[in-house]
Length: 322
Ligand code: SF4
Image (tube, rainbow, N blue to C red; front, side, top):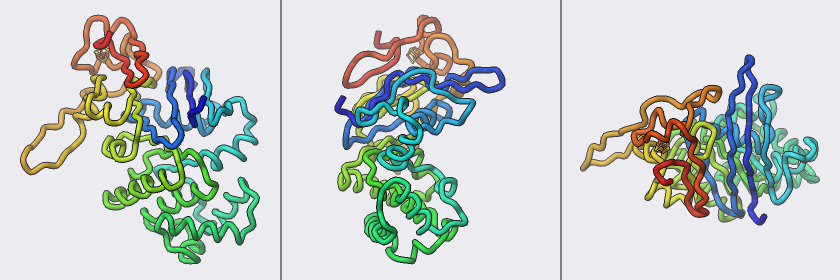
């Protein structure tokens, strides 16, 4: 296995009020080194639960990984002891950026203390070395160096600054993979663009891989090499970004692309969208889980679940393709 991350047949269940919610159902994908992969789909499709499984941050005791394997750099993350995982992987080799950085940072502790505590937990470094490194990384992410940021508290930073700070904190431990869950959703569009430019630049400068969790196809097109489209806990299509945008195969992928708003003076394109809702994870329809919303459904679709095709370049889970 030469890929950085390898996920094999992961199944995640939630047990709530005597009901079983199959949030992730047989998801497999790989992230090659120095590549970006996106998990794309509507809310409730299992994207974030997949990411939390990699981070071993599923809410306990309701959620558990029923089966599957997750390898990072050939190490089996799910068999590893939790202390070892926390010290050497989560927050160290695998960084995570959340949609709302305020939920991660402590509001009553200065940024300097939060950065030094975070780094000292993972690496043997003196405070002076950490602060030197922080100032270098601040320059890289276009934050003011020195005490301008370090002496402040999280609430004293703007939305753009705090997201840059999250990127800087993630980079402090020299990760190989960054998992970014809707990293720009809470930001103004102009700041969104700056953060995306920064992520693109850092990817090549620091040999990073990304796992991006998003419903925003514009961001995917900008940042990502490989796209996995998720629906109702399963991957329904995956392939290189260009193939997904230029030759989408699954009716759900086509629906997502038809839902993107474009601005043009010449044409007023009608947004078609996808009728209906994602089914609840405790009550999936029989056969293809997309069939109640699919404009191309056939007789077989409600009776038998299609498998993901074995095409190694561009795979789809749909009876239209046999
Ligand atoms: Fe639509 Fe049938 Fe394909 Fe499902 S299997 S996406 S219902 S055509």
